[in-house]
Image 1: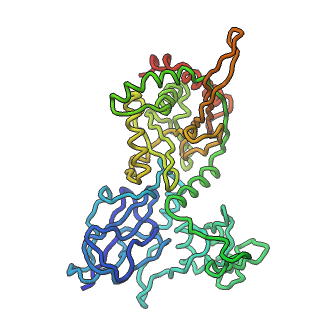
Image 2: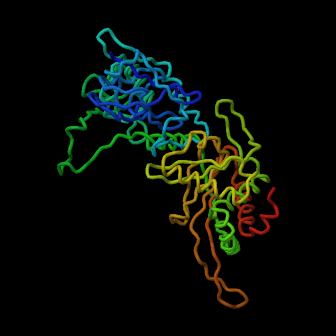
Amino acid sequence: MATNVKLPELGEGVTEGELIKWLVKPGDAVKADQAIAEVMTDKATVEVPSPIAGTVKELKFKAGDVLKVESVLLTLTGSGSPTSATVGKSPSSMSMPSSSYAMSAAPNSTTSATMSAAANLSTHSSEAGGFYPPVAESRVLATPATRRMAREMGVDINALSGSGLAGRVTREDVLGAKSSGTLGNGAGATRAGSPQMALKIPQSTYQGPAGAAEERVAIRGIRKKIAENMQMAKAIIPHFTLMDEADVTELVQMRESLKDVAEKAGTKITYLPFAMKALIATIRDFPMFNASIDDTAQEIVYKKYFNIGFAADTPNGLVVPVVKNADQKSILEISKEILDLSKRARDGKLKSEEMKGATITITNIGSVGGTYATPIINHPEVAILGMYKISDRPVIVDGKLSSIKVMNYTITADHRLIDGAVAANFLKAFLGRIQKPGHLMLELR
């Protein structure tokens, strides 16, 4: 007896996801609770387990397809269970691999709108037993929603020349091809408005002049989400960045003096918790930095809470864990939380709710190196603080040569809400606090 295994609910408000890859193939024996596929939503990538044991008979989709909740993923034989079985697991019980996505720690209005549009396009069986719209082999870059729309409209997406970043085919490219009557069914099809022919060379046949000198890998999983969100943030937010340096000699000394205390408390202290506390204290004087812009309603949303995101580098890309209500936690408590979140981020075990709700983000490149950078704001936030490496600086004090510890900082802001002079005053106030951590401790509340 064949049993259908369906895509379960993937989280609150999530109606669909993209199939990243199959973890099984036809003929494989599957155990109960064994992971069978990786599916990515706009919040995270999860491994979907099978509710029962059996042998894989048929895979219903291929990598890159957009799946709606309750879609039949695959069929199993030899299970002896009733047909149309669903995966009996709650989202919290699904394991989150190292490709778990966090760049959308804050709501992503563009991605949400795209996913909502895709949700209106259903996939159902045709009389011939296949799927409609038919799924074509993909050799171009495009979002799942764009691919689905192209199939629905009868446009061969592989024959279009994309106008997006890195040649990505956009929704407008598909609509343009449809309206111009260029459905892309031939090798010479072009996108609307393109002045030249866009002959696509199949990936499988192209090796380049030096043989197999190139390798092409599909942009999927966390890397795809990072690319989409970075492009969206840069397109929407008019960024500008201010840079300055701080004398952190006293901060270095304070951290050194607290190492033993932290060790006895079972943690260690980095400079990040101090930066968070100085940031929160400064925001109280400049509340526009702890805000967001509702692009749809054209409203500024001022946050009365302090959820500080911090960029964490993982083997599979950038994620942004969030320290919730950081203003209500001590330096030691924040230190423990940062270490815990960072470790689980590297292991791919962060929960989706731990990567959402940031009101402002800090990126700490100093542990790796680098003097300055121009970070991209995590939309819909309006600012991101950057902190960089510490170096020794020779100075003359009372006619004698001495040295101080110097750390560089940047503040990147959304110019729609924050003016240059305001950002300059914000950075000056922040640096004043970080340079005098003893005074900062007296200010904390």
